Length: 357
Image (cartoon, rainbow, N blue to C red; front, side):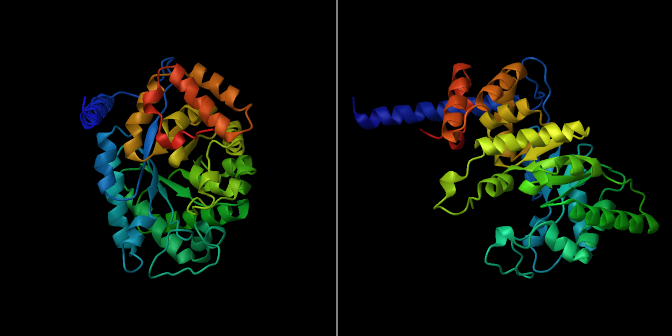
């Protein structure tokens, strides 16, 4: 047999398998994400552009766990006005109504810059970013919050999320500004209820203050990308250390478990957005930890749904308990992979979550 024919045949088989898999995943769109033993896990999406909306709905998203409001700012030549922001936010809120849309307040700095608002720093990830910028410029924060509130009139599906919170004082300041903006729009005749407010847990300091932060807000959301980066002191964009960036590192898993435990102790729901939530294998562990919803890029949603619908929550909890006793990230990866393979679930394991020993 000609070797190139064999390769062609293998390639055709892989393509056909992918096609069948894709068709199978499409059929899941209207089915809920429920485990074999009846546990319901809401799957939300991360969005930034209006184009994301159709993709998210096509894949059966149940809401938006993270709308990156900086995207409209990044594609503009200047700060968009309140009116311009209102129109953009209204489109997002209306497109998903009545499902919730979680809008993160402007999160610039780090690797996200605006040409018309340059931030030059030696160490941008430990610098002026997220809530730090908008609290130093309350006029930016107030205009954005007013636009969000006005955009939600009659829809009431807005949730506001505050990024990069490292302590109580920042949260108090931000809440004060949100209440001020709310008072202003109501005085102007826009009748909107105060939306649920949430805090992103993405700085180690916030992990240790989860209870205190949870008491002051309506919900929490873990930003797993930044949290992993800060816990492990690894810039994931730096090729020299990128292989040390690992969201299945025991320290990251422990931090996540602590956040869920402490948030629930205060009766507050906690979600997670970041690459980890969109990794079907990792999603099994996040569900076992007790996260109330997972938010991911729309592309990954069907795969995560497929995986969680094939497993028992009780089995996922057993697996998590076993992995929490392991101190080596690579052994955690291989053990997780092996356990899912033994359950017949290997086909949905992301290549990214496979780390060889």
